[in-house]
Amino acid sequence: MVRVRFAPSPTGMLHVGSLRSGLYNYLFARHMGGACILRIEDTDQVRFVEGAEQNILEMFAWAGIEFDEGPHVGGAYGPYRQSERTAIYREHAQFLIERGTAYYAFDTAEELERMRERQQQAGIAPKYDRSSMRNQFTLGEEETKRLLESGTDRVIRLFVPLTGETRTSDIVRGESVFANRTIDDQILLKSDGFPTYHLANIVDDHLMEITHVIRGEEWLPSLPKHVILYDAFGWDRPQFAHLPLLLSPERKKLSKRDGDVAVSDYKEKGFLPEALVNFVALLGWNPTADREIFPMEEMISMFDLAKVNKAGAIFDIEKLNWMNGMYLRELPVERLAADMQPFMEQAGFNGVDPAYAAKVVNLVKERIHFVKDIPLFADYMFGPVKNFDEEYAAKHWKPETAGQMLELADRLETLDEANWITEKIDGVVRAHAESLGISAGKLIHPMRLSITGKRVGAGMFETMEVLGRTESLTRLRAYAQR
RNA sequence: GCACCCAUCGACUAGUGGUUAGGUCGCCACUCUUUCAAGGUGGUAGCACGGGUUCGAAUCCCGUUGGGUGUACCA
Image: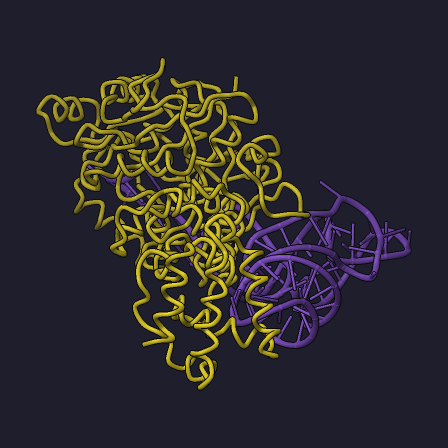
């Protein structure tokens, strides 16, 4: 059975790149009928951010991505927070020491810093020098034992052979070869007793029976270390798939400095979760080139890791905007009206009838890019017109217009509530225009001005139908008589 | 510096030896029209470069160039 995991570290708000990594894990798991696990990698006590885990959970829920196991739902392989598994890592580090594939080192941060400076000056790659630093090999058995017993700060490092090479395999990128002499003796267990990512990740993936490791390309350089670790334990390794990076318009790894990178930023800006998910899915993967809109279910059935691209993809907000518009026009209006609710409150429109709100959404959804825009775009649907477009008035309001509008109002009044529908209103307006010997447009523009105050909006007759008979007539007369 | 990864229109991509190099966003034009959108139609624009291999290379190989990631007691 396929088991995959998404393993974020709770150091901030969920990043859109992480959303995509999580999504690919989810799509792959669902496609294969396997399990998708959430594991919190909180082994860095310094970078821990309060509330980050909560944000990760909320954003995935918002995006419609569910985990089968994780700290919030439990599971048979827990605990799912690495900070609750430290004893496990210590035991495994110890096991490696006994096997001779890891060793103790006692260097201080300053000593390591000086080592790197020396190496830099000598023009060689910075890498832990096992033969000159303070570790169990240079210190000898007796001194090592003495330091351990005296409680001196120590770390456990991975023993990487100085010769030979390590071969790795990746579903997206194929085979690679790394010369062992270029691979660092990575710290596995820190002096605070916590594991580094490298140790915790391998131990947990093994214990949680992960079959496929799907993660960002930034991990590719440490893949050989991980492979060596699996060998050091004597474990089979999972299959790896390293995803291309999400890039800023400057082609750099998308980071906080590039503006909105948190999923919550997009939620607050009014993007629909379906659109954001669809959009990031297509950044690096493409099921079929003949269309762009794929609901989650369809992505699941079509997902294929082997079709994931190798090159990084620029996060192009323009296309996201377009896609949001596509979903905006497809999603049920009740759902959109519910999404609009928080923005209505922000705009000061409280207590609006949900059914009426849905009608307004339906009326204007083709003309806007975000539900968030509706309270501003169609403010006149939720309260009196606040101000009238002067320029628009100057262009379409002629000396004879007021009289024409009042006459029109009288004629429209002959339509009762039941007949206050788009087609009937349309008919009355056109008949009136004909009797006046002018084009319908000559009437419609002043009507739009009187009723909405704006020069742009939905179809005039549809707008009047939704606004209602009484309010429409009142506004028509009020402006003509002002 | 060193290690590794990558390279098709401005952007996302299809393409796995034979295509007029296709689609989508954006942009431009036209159309529809009561405005603005949406829609429809058309257009703009690309295989980084140089060598091979081959009857034939966007596709395979090598190199160059360019870009990216990593290089922590962070993940």
